[in-house]
Amino acid sequence: MNNIEIKKIDNNNAPYELLLSADPSRENIGRYLKKGNCFAAFGGNNIIGIYILAGKNSNTLEIMNIAVMEDERGKGIGKLLIVDAIKRAKKEGAKKLIVGTGNSSISQLAFYQKCGFRISGIKKDFFIKNYKNLIFEDGIQCKDMIMLEVAL
Ligand SMILES: CC(C)(COP(=O)(O)OP(=O)(O)OC[C@H]1O[C@@H](n2cnc3c(N)ncnc32)[C@H](O)[C@@H]1OP(=O)(O)O)[C@@H](O)C(=O)NCCC(=O)NCCS
Image 1 (cartoon, protein in one colour):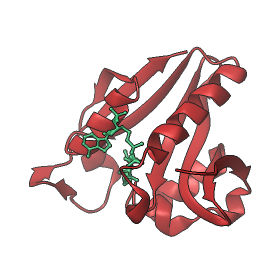
Image 2 (cartoon, rainbow, N blue to C red):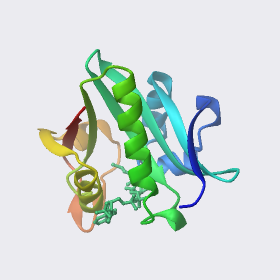
Image 3 (cartoon, rainbow, N blue to C red):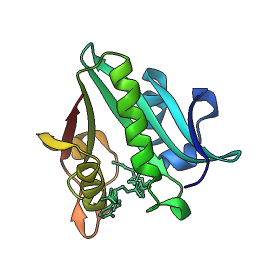
């Protein structure tokens, strides 16, 4: 966790493989990159974490994707990225920061809640309607998007 710097990077240099670990759809990631800005955590010269922040409306910003390199997980880097996103969203005058994850993404639901988010809604059948392939995690089918938010 020493010397980690989080800074904005050019969306054209976004690390797709890392982003794909948070969302299996290349198409979706392309869309997120069109409407959001990419922020990366650097450990030295290497990108070890990433998130995409996009405006939803004048009061709300959304984390569209967040991922930490597999061998760097569990060391507090994800939380650093969330703290950074909160700071930037506040600076932009947003009133809340939102994020969505699948009903089957149990560890991500734990992660977001430990970072201060609360469940705010459910988008029923989101993953059935918007993803070509069925998604299963821990033997649970991913069907619904659980929305979470933190007030700023
Ligand atoms: C989700 C992810 C970004 C979390 O990043 P991370 O660096 O591993 O998380 P941190 O080490 O910063 O953990 C922050 C807090 O969440 C908790 N947490 C993280 N993973 C957890 C898990 N699987 N189960 C329970 N708690 C967990 C940590 O214990 C910590 O809690 P604390 O503040 O009480 O100590 C990372 O695991 C990842 O990249 N996963 C793959 C991509 C992904 O699923 N992205 C999200 C898509 S919705």
